[in-house]
Image (cartoon, rainbow, N blue to C red; front, side, top):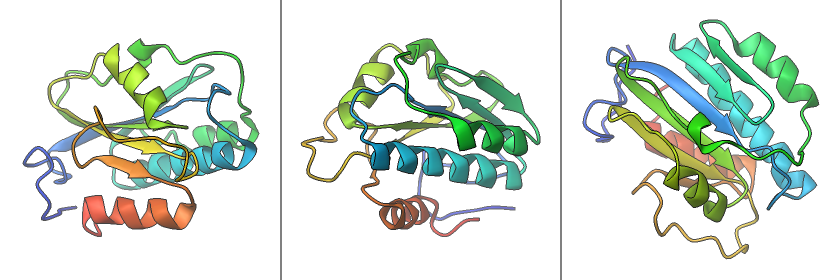
Length: 173
């Protein structure tokens, strides 16, 4: 039983209620440099692995792949090990959950501007909580205006991501 004291749409942190996690990785070249893209891939791998470990139905969506189900981490990690930024753009319809109970949608992208563009046209289920992780350097001019309140993580390095993620989940594994 995973629990946290922070109020994420009241009960989202309780693994008794949380059913699924969708990790959406924007692999388009726009906004990334080599380091920030590698960091985005590491963030996606971390969230997919943690979600599977928590027993959640897990999904990774990107322009080039859409893998979902239980025990998908191994295949996702193999794909993440070789993924490169490309010219394909993420279809905003991929930034979605489903209607089968509470879910978490983690959007990993270069900048908050990319996240705003994707979220503006997405189909987030009413029971889903969105967390945006942007990996561009801290001085890229990104602002959190228009982002989910309290659920936007600046990840200019992996230590910053880890600290912010732990702050959101209040140390829940």
